Image (cartoon, one colour):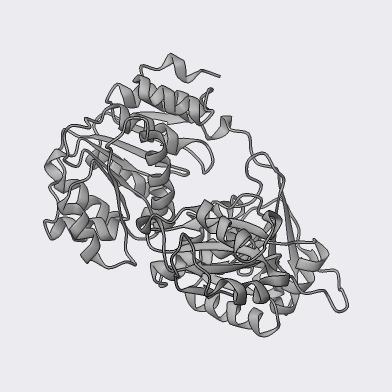
Length: 450
């Protein structure tokens, strides 16, 4: 494979790549970066985990003029979670350049703050189509300076009904722009964008050259899916999993049912406020909640390291959705497990997925043990904007409460909130000690989540 050193990148980007230990390009990076740096339009077939985000992040930053404080690049993503992940990657790479402002514009949060941020300018905007279009129509930022547009996960955006919004957004932006389109699949609807809005794009197909993740696929025949979940968790020794439902209503109902029978579960779907979505993902990632019940749209942008398995509570209605769901597990070279629960009435729908597996009867287990998580989360009413650091939180827990480092888990910080995971076995006792103790000499409000 090719080295990043073969590319005409500025010294700051090469320094950032070295710091992040990126030396060799993935197939999608070696295939697209020369085209992107040559300022040509590009269509790339790239699956999740292929390195596409780093590819267009480098291409975007290399062409950016830090001294011009107008919006120069617009990146559209299907979900808020994916937009935040993309923005995080770009900020990490751009840190060596300095003075690069990356702004996320997504629904689920008030527009007032976004409008205020836009008044101060941004070099790169990363957002979801609906919110970006709304802010363009309100004339809150000038699209005339945009030189590059990236459509990330284009097939998913179109599947979610964003094709009209994307078309409207592209009509706001100068036709001289560079347009980059990344898509895992190429349904006919993608042609609508490529033919109308791209100029002689170069096609790069790399999906077949990427090592496929090792995912064991199993389908279980069952009539009572709710009781089947406890059986599956016990039988496969699953400690954390995403369970997929086809609708928001079903996701909420399943979450309530699982909590009612004593299985701690959180939900994630598009109707939730951004605050609630952030909190659910943080608790799931820091091992405070073992199960996340999600819809396809919400689950698409989640990247969880070390996920034991995914479970299809509902049989997906399209093979593409099945592929995207099971792609949440078996990442970073690890083996994954994908389980689908199928009733006898759903056999025809399951057969339409064309998977090389035959549903089998679920082994019956008497009194399966309930899933427990090792951690519980404390929320602190202060974050990055208050200059509260992770080290300050660790220090307070150790010196004020007598915790050991082993009892303190992952720490996540947002602008005005911080989340710290502590050992579940002693969480109640330690929270009572911690709730009125100072951090950096100040008393902040605290909550114990469950």
